[in-house]
Each structure stands twice: as structure tokens, then as C-alpha cells.
Image (cartoon, rainbow, N blue to C red; front, top):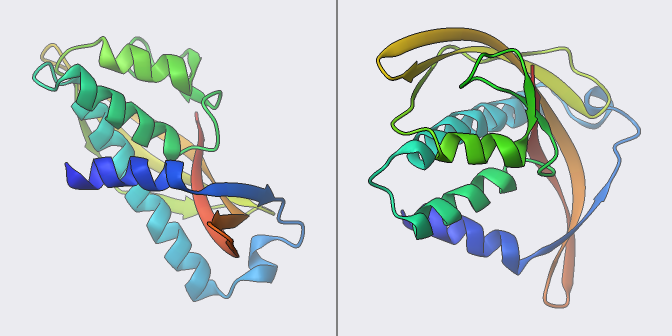
Length: 174
């Protein structure tokens, strides 16, 4: 619970300026360093589904759901990222903001993630693939999903100090 709250406070206490990675990930990072960023992205995907499960939990207060939503949004570059509608039919796409509302309004969803693999390194992103089982009203639906993960260089400002850092952000789910 403290991690959820501190993550939201940390995100609002800093300012970021993003620059596009023009040289490509493989040119900027050695294989072990890139693998570490990909491992970090896997953790973010796992966190994402844990947050979704909490959003769907009817025993969680509205105030905590607001904090959870903010943490979900902080995993992504923006709220307009398209998500596959894994609750209704798995075929339509929704913006992240609408997707989060749908999850919050669907009681008692459960998510089980399968193995997450990374592939197709592009100039500033890579593709992750995984299966997710969605349990809704006693029905189990298993989906094979692909999710883009972006690695961007940001300039973070803390008071009068600035520092360039690389950050992973989750992207669209297909």
C-alpha cells in the first residue's frame, strides 16, 4: 500500500522532458543492459495486471482506486494508448483511460499472467508477448497478447538539479 502511494507522490514531485532515441536501443546499450531494461518492463507488466485486479476489487475504497488508477497511468507514456478490450470481447480497442474505467466498473476480475518474452528490438521500443487468463463471473478466457514497451531518455528535474535518465513505459496492447 505504501509503495502505491509513494509511487504516485514521486511521479508528481518530478518534472520530465523526453527526447527521442535516434540511434536505436542496440546502439545505445549492451545486450546485458538492454536485458535488464526488458526485465524491468516485465515487472511493470506484472504490476499493471495486479493494479487492474485491485481496481476491480469491490472491497477497495474509491480513494485507493483513484491512487491505483494514477499508478496505472504512470506506467504508460499517456492515457490515449490503445488497449485491447480484454474484458468484453478481446477484439475492440480502447484508450487506456476508458480501459481503466471499464476495469473499475467490472467487479471481481482476476488476471493470471503466463510467461512474458521480449523480441523485435526497434529504434526506441521492443515487443513483449504473453498470455493472460481473465477470470470474470466464473468464466475463464485466455488471450495471447503483444505489448509494445518504450525506452526513452528523460531529463528529470529535482529542485535545481537536472539529470538524464532512461525510463521504460508500457505501450499499446494488441
